[in-house]
Image (cartoon, rainbow, N blue to C red; front, side, top):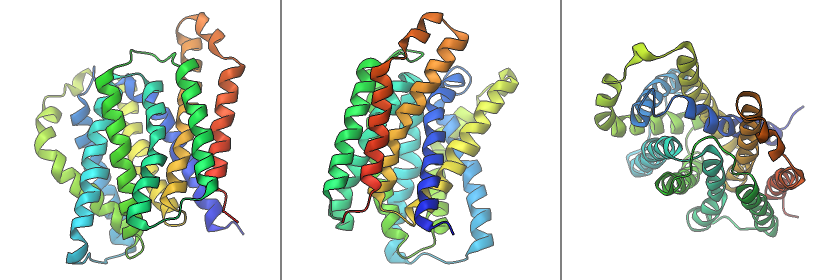
Length: 301
C-alpha cells in the first residue's frame, strides 16, 4: 500500500516537472502572440471554473468570516500577484534565469513558516537548502545558455513571484488545517480572477486569436491545463500531507528540467555548438539539486 507521504512526494515531483518545462514552453507564445496579462486572465478564468466544478462534486463547505482575510491574501498573493509577476517576468527574461531565481522559494517559505506556522527549522532542511542552493548557483554560472536574453526587470518580477508564492504556500497550509484543500484552492483562484479581471480583460479582447497557429493553441492549453490546473492540484494535494518547506524544496528540480529542455531544443533546432554545453559540472549541479531535495524532505530523527 502506497503511503500518503509517498504519493505527496510523487505529486510534487510531477508538479515541478511541469513547472520546469513551462519556463521554456511559455516563451513560445508570450509576448509575441499574447500579452502576459491576457494569459493570466484566461488561466485564472478557466481554472476557476474547473476547480469549482470539482469543489461542488466533493464538498459544499463554507468559509467562516474570520478566515476571509486569509483567503483574500491567498487569492492576492497566490492567484493574482504571483501569476502576473511570473508571466511578465518569463516574457522578459531567460527561462534558465527564471527557474534558478525561483529556487529562492524554500528560503522564503522557511522564514514565513517560522513566524506564521511556528515550524521548527531542522538541520536537514538547512543543509538541504544549502546543498540545493549550491547546485542552483552553479547552474547559473555554467548553465545560462537559455534562448533569449536576461533582464533585470524580468528577474525582479520572478524574484517577487517567488516571495509571494512562498507566502501563499504557508497561508494555504494554515487554511488546510481547517478546510478541504479543494475549498482553499477554489477560493484562491476565484479571488485571484476577480482581482485580475478588470486589469486584463482589455488585453484579452485585443488579442489576435486569428494569428494563433495550432502550436500556439497547444502551448496555451499546456499553460492553462497543465501549468495551472494540474500543477496546482498536485501541489495542493501534497501540501495536505507534507509541510510547506518540503513542498517548496521540490522547486530545486525546476532548473534541472529547464536546463535539460533548453539543451535539447538548442541542440535539435538551433546551433550544434550548444550540444557542447553539457559537461560534468552541470551534471554534478543537477545531482546537488536532487540531494538537496532529499535532505529537506527527510524526517529529522
